[in-house]
Length: 352
Image 1 (tube, rainbow, N blue to C red):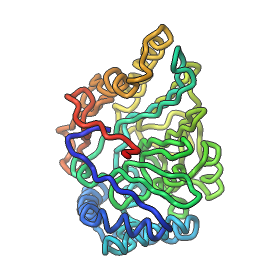
Image 2 (image 1 turned 180 degrees about the vertical axis):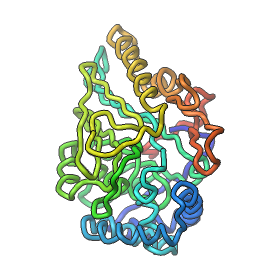
Image 3 (image 1 turned 45 degrees about the vertical axis):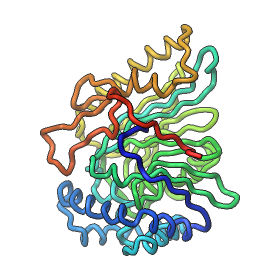
Image 4 (image 1 turned 90 degrees about the horizontal axis):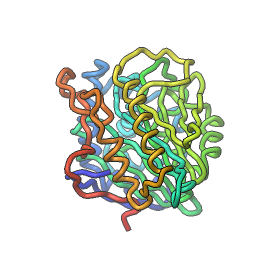
Protein backbone atom coordinates (compact mmCIF):
# COMPACT_ATOMS: atom_id res chain seq x y z
CA UNK A 1 0.00 0.00 0.00
CA UNK A 2 1.39 3.40 -0.93
CA UNK A 3 0.13 6.97 -1.06
CA UNK A 4 1.00 10.60 -0.60
CA UNK A 5 -1.31 10.50 2.42
CA UNK A 6 -0.08 8.58 5.45
CA UNK A 7 -2.88 6.89 7.43
CA UNK A 8 -2.78 6.93 11.20
CA UNK A 9 -0.99 3.99 12.80
CA UNK A 10 -2.67 2.77 15.96
CA UNK A 11 -2.00 -0.08 18.38
CA UNK A 12 -4.99 -1.53 20.24
CA UNK A 13 -4.78 -3.98 23.12
CA UNK A 14 -6.80 -5.36 26.00
CA UNK A 15 -10.30 -6.80 26.20
CA UNK A 16 -12.65 -6.45 23.22
CA UNK A 17 -14.38 -3.45 24.78
CA UNK A 18 -11.04 -1.82 25.67
CA UNK A 19 -9.79 -2.39 22.12
CA UNK A 20 -12.96 -0.76 20.82
CA UNK A 21 -12.72 2.20 23.19
CA UNK A 22 -9.15 2.88 22.09
CA UNK A 23 -10.20 2.59 18.43
CA UNK A 24 -13.10 4.99 18.92
CA UNK A 25 -11.07 7.51 20.90
CA UNK A 26 -8.06 7.54 18.56
CA UNK A 27 -10.18 7.72 15.39
CA UNK A 28 -13.13 9.73 16.69
CA UNK A 29 -13.06 12.49 14.08
CA UNK A 30 -12.48 9.98 11.28
CA UNK A 31 -15.43 7.85 12.42
CA UNK A 32 -17.74 10.86 12.43
CA UNK A 33 -16.54 11.80 8.96
CA UNK A 34 -17.16 8.22 7.82
CA UNK A 35 -20.75 8.57 8.96
CA UNK A 36 -21.13 11.68 6.79
CA UNK A 37 -19.52 9.98 3.80
CA UNK A 38 -21.74 6.93 4.01
CA UNK A 39 -24.85 8.97 4.74
CA UNK A 40 -24.36 10.62 1.35
CA UNK A 41 -23.48 7.34 -0.35
CA UNK A 42 -26.48 5.47 1.06
CA UNK A 43 -28.74 8.25 -0.19
CA UNK A 44 -27.08 8.19 -3.61
CA UNK A 45 -26.92 4.42 -4.13
CA UNK A 46 -29.94 3.17 -2.19
CA UNK A 47 -32.17 6.22 -1.51
CA UNK A 48 -31.86 5.53 2.21
CA UNK A 49 -31.72 8.26 4.84
CA UNK A 50 -29.45 7.73 7.85
CA UNK A 51 -32.41 6.97 10.17
CA UNK A 52 -33.55 4.32 7.67
CA UNK A 53 -30.02 2.92 7.57
CA UNK A 54 -30.03 2.63 11.36
CA UNK A 55 -33.26 0.63 11.28
CA UNK A 56 -31.58 -1.95 9.04
CA UNK A 57 -28.52 -1.84 11.28
CA UNK A 58 -30.76 -2.67 14.24
CA UNK A 59 -31.50 -6.08 12.67
CA UNK A 60 -27.80 -6.78 12.21
CA UNK A 61 -27.12 -5.62 15.76
CA UNK A 62 -29.13 -8.57 17.10
CA UNK A 63 -27.25 -11.00 14.86
CA UNK A 64 -23.77 -9.73 15.71
CA UNK A 65 -24.50 -9.64 19.44
CA UNK A 66 -25.83 -13.22 19.34
CA UNK A 67 -23.21 -14.85 17.08
CA UNK A 68 -20.03 -12.90 17.86
CA UNK A 69 -20.44 -11.24 21.28
CA UNK A 70 -16.75 -10.37 21.53
CA UNK A 71 -16.84 -8.46 18.23
CA UNK A 72 -20.08 -6.80 19.31
CA UNK A 73 -18.43 -5.70 22.57
CA UNK A 74 -15.65 -4.17 20.49
CA UNK A 75 -18.24 -2.23 18.47
CA UNK A 76 -19.81 -1.00 21.70
CA UNK A 77 -16.38 0.20 22.80
CA UNK A 78 -15.82 1.99 19.48
CA UNK A 79 -19.14 3.80 19.89
CA UNK A 80 -18.25 4.80 23.46
CA UNK A 81 -14.78 5.98 22.48
CA UNK A 82 -16.06 8.04 19.56
CA UNK A 83 -19.14 9.33 21.43
CA UNK A 84 -21.58 8.03 18.82
CA UNK A 85 -24.47 5.58 19.01
CA UNK A 86 -23.81 1.85 18.77
CA UNK A 87 -26.13 1.66 15.74
CA UNK A 88 -23.90 4.15 13.92
CA UNK A 89 -20.99 1.74 14.31
CA UNK A 90 -23.09 -1.28 13.36
CA UNK A 91 -24.20 0.60 10.23
CA UNK A 92 -20.60 1.26 9.18
CA UNK A 93 -19.77 -2.41 9.65
CA UNK A 94 -22.83 -3.47 7.62
CA UNK A 95 -22.40 -0.89 4.89
CA UNK A 96 -21.99 -3.53 2.15
CA UNK A 97 -25.18 -5.33 3.17
CA UNK A 98 -27.30 -2.23 3.77
CA UNK A 99 -26.47 -0.93 0.31
CA UNK A 100 -27.45 -4.33 -1.17
CA UNK A 101 -24.13 -4.67 -2.93
CA UNK A 102 -24.25 -1.27 -4.61
CA UNK A 103 -20.87 -0.30 -3.18
CA UNK A 104 -18.27 -1.49 -5.65
CA UNK A 105 -14.94 -1.50 -3.86
CA UNK A 106 -12.61 -4.44 -4.00
CA UNK A 107 -11.31 -4.58 -7.58
CA UNK A 108 -8.58 -7.13 -8.37
CA UNK A 109 -6.97 -9.60 -5.95
CA UNK A 110 -4.46 -12.40 -6.43
CA UNK A 111 -2.91 -15.25 -4.51
CA UNK A 112 0.26 -17.01 -5.57
CA UNK A 113 2.17 -19.98 -4.19
CA UNK A 114 5.42 -19.23 -5.92
CA UNK A 115 7.45 -21.73 -7.91
CA UNK A 116 11.03 -21.27 -8.98
CA UNK A 117 14.58 -20.87 -7.77
CA UNK A 118 14.85 -19.16 -4.36
CA UNK A 119 11.07 -18.59 -4.08
CA UNK A 120 9.65 -22.14 -4.09
CA UNK A 121 6.65 -22.40 -1.79
CA UNK A 122 6.54 -18.73 -0.76
CA UNK A 123 3.01 -17.33 -0.47
CA UNK A 124 2.01 -13.97 -1.95
CA UNK A 125 -1.35 -12.28 -1.37
CA UNK A 126 -2.07 -8.92 -3.02
CA UNK A 127 -4.85 -6.65 -4.19
CA UNK A 128 -5.64 -3.14 -5.26
CA UNK A 129 -8.59 -1.40 -3.63
CA UNK A 130 -10.52 1.06 -5.78
CA UNK A 131 -12.79 3.21 -3.68
CA UNK A 132 -13.94 6.76 -3.10
CA UNK A 133 -11.24 9.35 -2.43
CA UNK A 134 -13.26 10.75 0.46
CA UNK A 135 -12.49 7.66 2.53
CA UNK A 136 -8.70 7.80 2.21
CA UNK A 137 -8.21 10.34 5.00
CA UNK A 138 -10.18 8.02 7.28
CA UNK A 139 -8.03 4.94 6.74
CA UNK A 140 -5.83 3.56 9.49
CA UNK A 141 -3.11 0.95 9.90
CA UNK A 142 -4.22 -1.02 12.92
CA UNK A 143 -2.40 -3.50 15.16
CA UNK A 144 -4.58 -5.49 17.56
CA UNK A 145 -3.19 -7.55 20.41
CA UNK A 146 -5.15 -9.72 22.84
CA UNK A 147 -3.71 -12.12 25.39
CA UNK A 148 -3.34 -15.65 23.99
CA UNK A 149 -4.75 -14.60 20.60
CA UNK A 150 -3.18 -14.09 17.19
CA UNK A 151 -1.86 -10.56 16.70
CA UNK A 152 -3.66 -8.77 13.85
CA UNK A 153 -2.48 -6.11 11.42
CA UNK A 154 -4.96 -4.58 8.99
CA UNK A 155 -5.74 -1.59 6.83
CA UNK A 156 -9.25 -0.50 7.71
CA UNK A 157 -11.70 2.35 7.58
CA UNK A 158 -12.29 4.12 10.87
CA UNK A 159 -15.03 2.37 12.82
CA UNK A 160 -14.85 -0.91 10.90
CA UNK A 161 -13.69 -3.99 12.81
CA UNK A 162 -12.46 -6.15 9.92
CA UNK A 163 -10.77 -5.36 6.64
CA UNK A 164 -7.72 -6.25 4.54
CA UNK A 165 -4.76 -7.61 6.50
CA UNK A 166 -2.99 -10.57 8.10
CA UNK A 167 -2.13 -12.05 11.48
CA UNK A 168 0.79 -13.53 13.38
CA UNK A 169 -0.19 -17.07 12.31
CA UNK A 170 0.40 -16.14 8.68
CA UNK A 171 -3.27 -15.91 7.68
CA UNK A 172 -3.99 -13.04 5.28
CA UNK A 173 -7.11 -11.81 3.49
CA UNK A 174 -8.18 -9.65 0.56
CA UNK A 175 -11.73 -8.63 -0.40
CA UNK A 176 -13.68 -8.22 -3.64
CA UNK A 177 -17.19 -6.76 -3.58
CA UNK A 178 -19.93 -8.72 -5.36
CA UNK A 179 -23.41 -7.47 -6.25
CA UNK A 180 -25.97 -10.24 -5.86
CA UNK A 181 -29.21 -11.06 -4.07
CA UNK A 182 -30.38 -12.01 -1.54
CA UNK A 183 -29.04 -10.56 1.69
CA UNK A 184 -29.90 -12.03 5.08
CA UNK A 185 -29.79 -10.02 8.31
CA UNK A 186 -29.75 -13.22 10.37
CA UNK A 187 -26.21 -13.88 9.11
CA UNK A 188 -22.94 -12.04 9.69
CA UNK A 189 -21.95 -8.97 7.64
CA UNK A 190 -18.82 -9.36 5.56
CA UNK A 191 -16.66 -7.04 7.67
CA UNK A 192 -17.35 -9.20 10.71
CA UNK A 193 -16.50 -12.27 8.61
CA UNK A 194 -13.21 -10.63 7.65
CA UNK A 195 -12.39 -10.13 11.33
CA UNK A 196 -13.19 -13.79 12.00
CA UNK A 197 -10.70 -14.76 9.29
CA UNK A 198 -8.08 -12.49 10.86
CA UNK A 199 -8.61 -14.24 14.19
CA UNK A 200 -8.03 -17.66 12.62
CA UNK A 201 -4.94 -19.88 12.74
CA UNK A 202 -5.38 -21.31 9.22
CA UNK A 203 -7.65 -21.37 6.18
CA UNK A 204 -9.37 -24.46 7.56
CA UNK A 205 -9.96 -22.75 10.89
CA UNK A 206 -11.50 -19.69 9.19
CA UNK A 207 -13.85 -21.78 7.03
CA UNK A 208 -14.92 -23.95 9.97
CA UNK A 209 -15.73 -20.91 12.12
CA UNK A 210 -17.68 -19.13 9.38
CA UNK A 211 -19.70 -22.26 8.65
CA UNK A 212 -20.33 -22.94 12.35
CA UNK A 213 -21.71 -19.41 12.72
CA UNK A 214 -24.06 -19.85 9.76
CA UNK A 215 -22.25 -18.05 6.95
CA UNK A 216 -22.41 -14.50 5.63
CA UNK A 217 -25.21 -12.01 5.05
CA UNK A 218 -24.24 -10.89 1.56
CA UNK A 219 -22.40 -12.19 -1.48
CA UNK A 220 -18.71 -11.34 -1.32
CA UNK A 221 -15.35 -12.82 -2.27
CA UNK A 222 -12.56 -13.25 0.27
CA UNK A 223 -9.17 -14.34 -1.02
CA UNK A 224 -7.47 -16.01 1.92
CA UNK A 225 -3.97 -17.40 2.41
CA UNK A 226 -2.03 -19.11 5.15
CA UNK A 227 1.53 -20.37 5.31
CA UNK A 228 0.85 -23.29 2.95
CA UNK A 229 -1.71 -22.22 0.35
CA UNK A 230 -4.20 -19.70 -1.02
CA UNK A 231 -7.93 -20.12 -1.62
CA UNK A 232 -10.63 -18.01 -3.27
CA UNK A 233 -13.81 -18.09 -1.16
CA UNK A 234 -16.98 -17.10 -3.03
CA UNK A 235 -19.32 -16.57 -0.07
CA UNK A 236 -23.08 -16.01 -0.12
CA UNK A 237 -26.10 -16.37 2.18
CA UNK A 238 -27.22 -19.39 0.12
CA UNK A 239 -23.92 -21.26 0.15
CA UNK A 240 -20.23 -21.01 -0.64
CA UNK A 241 -17.87 -22.12 -3.40
CA UNK A 242 -14.10 -22.43 -3.12
CA UNK A 243 -11.62 -21.98 -5.97
CA UNK A 244 -8.17 -23.50 -5.69
CA UNK A 245 -5.16 -22.09 -7.57
CA UNK A 246 -4.18 -23.61 -10.89
CA UNK A 247 -1.14 -25.77 -11.49
CA UNK A 248 0.98 -22.61 -11.64
CA UNK A 249 0.02 -21.83 -8.03
CA UNK A 250 -1.91 -18.71 -9.01
CA UNK A 251 -5.51 -17.63 -8.40
CA UNK A 252 -7.08 -14.26 -9.26
CA UNK A 253 -10.49 -12.73 -8.62
CA UNK A 254 -12.38 -9.56 -9.50
CA UNK A 255 -15.93 -8.31 -8.85
CA UNK A 256 -18.06 -11.21 -10.08
CA UNK A 257 -18.56 -14.80 -9.03
CA UNK A 258 -16.78 -17.42 -11.12
CA UNK A 259 -18.32 -20.62 -9.74
CA UNK A 260 -20.98 -19.61 -7.22
CA UNK A 261 -24.31 -19.81 -9.08
CA UNK A 262 -26.48 -20.04 -5.97
CA UNK A 263 -27.43 -16.36 -5.94
CA UNK A 264 -28.94 -13.90 -8.41
CA UNK A 265 -26.06 -11.88 -9.79
CA UNK A 266 -26.86 -9.32 -12.50
CA UNK A 267 -24.16 -8.28 -14.94
CA UNK A 268 -23.39 -4.97 -13.28
CA UNK A 269 -19.71 -4.26 -13.84
CA UNK A 270 -18.79 -5.11 -17.42
CA UNK A 271 -15.09 -4.58 -16.81
CA UNK A 272 -14.85 -7.30 -14.15
CA UNK A 273 -14.57 -10.33 -16.51
CA UNK A 274 -12.13 -8.38 -18.67
CA UNK A 275 -9.96 -7.59 -15.64
CA UNK A 276 -10.00 -11.21 -14.53
CA UNK A 277 -8.90 -12.47 -17.94
CA UNK A 278 -6.24 -9.78 -18.10
CA UNK A 279 -4.93 -10.54 -14.60
CA UNK A 280 -4.66 -14.23 -15.42
CA UNK A 281 -2.81 -13.47 -18.65
CA UNK A 282 -0.31 -11.12 -16.99
CA UNK A 283 0.15 -13.53 -14.09
CA UNK A 284 0.80 -16.43 -16.44
CA UNK A 285 3.53 -14.43 -18.15
CA UNK A 286 5.09 -13.53 -14.80
CA UNK A 287 4.93 -17.10 -13.50
CA UNK A 288 6.64 -18.31 -16.67
CA UNK A 289 9.39 -15.71 -16.34
CA UNK A 290 10.02 -16.69 -12.70
CA UNK A 291 10.23 -20.36 -13.63
CA UNK A 292 12.72 -19.43 -16.33
CA UNK A 293 15.02 -17.68 -13.90
CA UNK A 294 13.65 -14.17 -13.26
CA UNK A 295 14.75 -13.35 -9.71
CA UNK A 296 12.14 -11.40 -7.76
CA UNK A 297 12.49 -12.65 -4.19
CA UNK A 298 13.57 -9.23 -2.86
CA UNK A 299 11.15 -7.18 -4.98
CA UNK A 300 7.92 -9.13 -5.31
CA UNK A 301 5.73 -6.14 -4.45
CA UNK A 302 7.38 -3.84 -6.96
CA UNK A 303 7.21 -6.46 -9.73
CA UNK A 304 3.51 -7.09 -9.09
CA UNK A 305 2.78 -3.35 -9.19
CA UNK A 306 4.75 -2.88 -12.39
CA UNK A 307 3.53 -5.94 -14.28
CA UNK A 308 -0.03 -6.46 -13.04
CA UNK A 309 -1.51 -3.75 -10.83
CA UNK A 310 -0.42 -0.81 -13.02
CA UNK A 311 -2.15 -2.27 -16.09
CA UNK A 312 -4.60 0.15 -17.75
CA UNK A 313 -6.02 -2.15 -20.44
CA UNK A 314 -9.78 -1.49 -20.88
CA UNK A 315 -9.61 1.80 -18.96
CA UNK A 316 -11.46 3.19 -17.02
CA UNK A 317 -12.46 -0.31 -15.83
CA UNK A 318 -8.89 -1.56 -15.87
CA UNK A 319 -6.91 -3.42 -13.21
CA UNK A 320 -5.49 0.01 -12.40
CA UNK A 321 -8.91 1.60 -12.19
CA UNK A 322 -9.39 5.15 -13.43
CA UNK A 323 -12.06 7.56 -12.24
CA UNK A 324 -15.16 7.10 -14.41
CA UNK A 325 -16.61 10.46 -15.55
CA UNK A 326 -19.97 8.82 -16.30
CA UNK A 327 -20.59 7.95 -12.65
CA UNK A 328 -21.97 10.44 -10.10
CA UNK A 329 -19.38 11.99 -7.81
CA UNK A 330 -20.41 10.17 -4.59
CA UNK A 331 -20.00 6.75 -6.25
CA UNK A 332 -16.94 7.20 -8.45
CA UNK A 333 -14.03 4.86 -7.83
CA UNK A 334 -10.39 5.87 -7.83
CA UNK A 335 -7.18 4.17 -6.87
CA UNK A 336 -5.58 5.39 -3.63
CA UNK A 337 -1.96 5.72 -4.74
CA UNK A 338 -2.16 4.48 -8.32
CA UNK A 339 0.24 1.74 -9.38
CA UNK A 340 2.19 3.04 -12.34
CA UNK A 341 2.47 6.54 -10.94
CA UNK A 342 5.62 7.81 -9.27
CA UNK A 343 5.61 5.87 -6.05
CA UNK A 344 5.28 7.65 -2.76
CA UNK A 345 6.01 6.27 0.67
CA UNK A 346 5.67 2.49 1.01
CA UNK A 347 3.74 1.73 4.19
CA UNK A 348 4.63 -1.54 5.87
CA UNK A 349 2.96 -3.65 8.53
CA UNK A 350 4.14 -4.30 11.18
CA UNK A 351 5.64 -0.82 11.23
CA UNK A 352 7.75 -1.33 14.36
